[in-house]
Length: 623
Image 1 (spheres, one colour):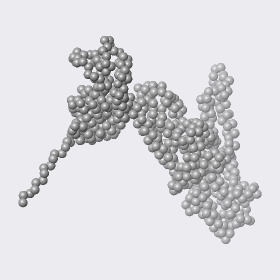
Image 2 (cartoon, helix red, strand yellow):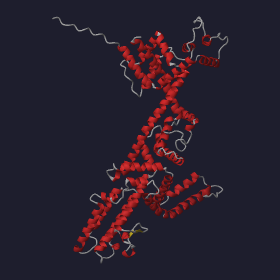
Image 3 (cartoon, one colour):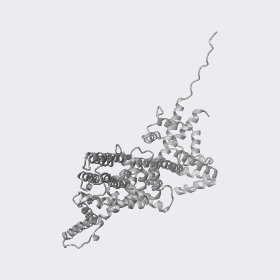
Image 4 (cartoon, helix red, strand yellow):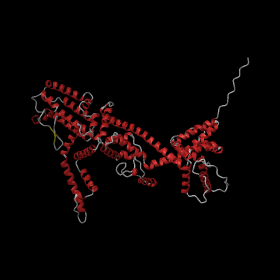
């Protein structure tokens, strides 16, 4: 046995494995597409991520509901590219016969899901679903209002949106007066009440306008704080209160010192020390309905709730007016009530009535409705998600450099958390896919009778077969042995092997010649091959292997199966060897076409290179 012989046998085996691997990859891809294994595995991985591996039925139900709502998010819906027309649509409808592709499996009324979700998309969808951004805005708004009240005190707003400042006698305590008012009135106890001072009224009006701009999201927190500092500077420079210069200078100095202590040099102190921008730990506590941070938010919405009854009355009156107009437009007139309408029609009436509200009432109503939806979602939020967000917030807190980037840093931490989890899930999917590939490989090997031991025996004993397969395999491999690009690899290999397989009879398949050798049956009596039929070959093989006379009748498909089973029972060692050969072939097929193509390229190149010529012995120079 020389090296070329070994290489030719190896090339034959690898070439056959390559061909069968191509078939297996097509079968596995088809099954994966039909059953949506990638999409199903992604959804299950997200559920495991959010569930924290805790197998509590209540938590699992909450996690499943949360993931379904995430899949209903527009960002994730846009990632899901389902078929919409043509053959692809009919094919997608056909796949719904499988239980895993039922409608609602990937969110509301969705039978398909994305196979991949980017970490950024997941993080944004999760935080938006939890209403984190809206809760941050509301908490910041509440704290900014408290910050303004701490400076200028409480005030009322009249019907013309003007401010009304209470007199000193109307104030209950120093907190309602505001720190600026306390400083001024303590420095000048004999001066008239500041509620009538035009400079102070202007300061309070500025603060009121700033708060309105922040509520309507027309200004950022940083801009609002800067404007508050500038308004206070104008009040100080105005020399309030009016008085002698000797009296005013110490007061102005105290006001400047107070302003510097509150706002700092660049106004960042007001945001950080004043707690205007929630910290990451507070952001994590927002999803905990028992936390002090969440109570701050609910208290603010409780105040809004007291203002809703008049707004609800306006909405109901408008809806009833529209209903009356609708009833009177029919002939004969109808007598429908709002409760008699379909949900869609009632929603149309309600939306039209809401749009008729004033700008302030509309903003108030929508703000509270958003809170109601968030509160419903947080009530059903699984405990593992709260715990995970708390851990991620603490980790992100160490990386935050400025207050404006808190929520962005948390989003990045959630993205990183998701990315790492999906990397592990990808490893699990690959292991599962490899197991499926082995099962598919063994199934293909048994269906086409690809017995590794038999293939090896045929290649070892049949020189003509060995040469033909080696020649065809050499045609598949590029001249330079280069591996094609990964994106085109399988298509290129498939096209090349299809051409190379022409006029090549591989030592596989269920036929009498292969089975006779596999079962090591005694040679049958010589027959004329030119006139023999396929049925005669089968009958002769069965007679030889079972040691009996050939059948005189035509054998059906089931007859052949039954007789082959008898051979397995009468020749158990050969049958076991066949089973073992199928298993080896199945494992080899599961290695994948790219692996075998790469190995085939290397072996063919080694064979074509040959051995190096012997070097001539060095001659000793004559003396």
